[in-house]
Image (cartoon, rainbow over all chains, first blue to last red; front, side, top):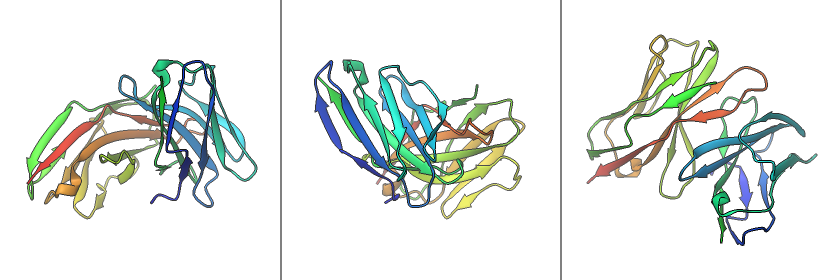
Length: 111
Length: 116
């Protein structure tokens, strides 16, 4: 158990819909990262937050957005979902950006 | 931009044997970390071992060790006395220590199967 929690574990939805993935980092970690793992794109960095502020952006679509709240939990919002958005979404946390500890992931299936 | 290459999509080895997974990377930076992550069938990403670029000594964690060749930009993982529980996907990953660029860049992974 890494100490990072993610909810829900599984999510099945239809194209065009909007979903929210939630992540709680390890106690004391200020940085939260979101990654997408899909069959065709592999593991890709989406976005990083540090103590409530966006710190780095990767290959994140405009239909996706994220935020980190004062209690340091983070949410990833995915809207206008397409079939290609089906993937495993990981949240990770770290203190200083070196070792990142991953949550169990949320498996998103878009039908 | 950094890139990480794992040229062995799949490997298999007999239980108790030693196996080495290869990884090369490309970067213009001098200050970074390298990692090996394990992803078993449960899909959980588990940190196996970490290497800091400024350290010449190769990292070791129990049965896992690395061969870090900074000039060659090579970072291989050796698993000794392999066990059935080592069966998993293994990802090599790079992270910069530059402020605002602390994202993990992953290779495509090596699927390792330990044969009983």
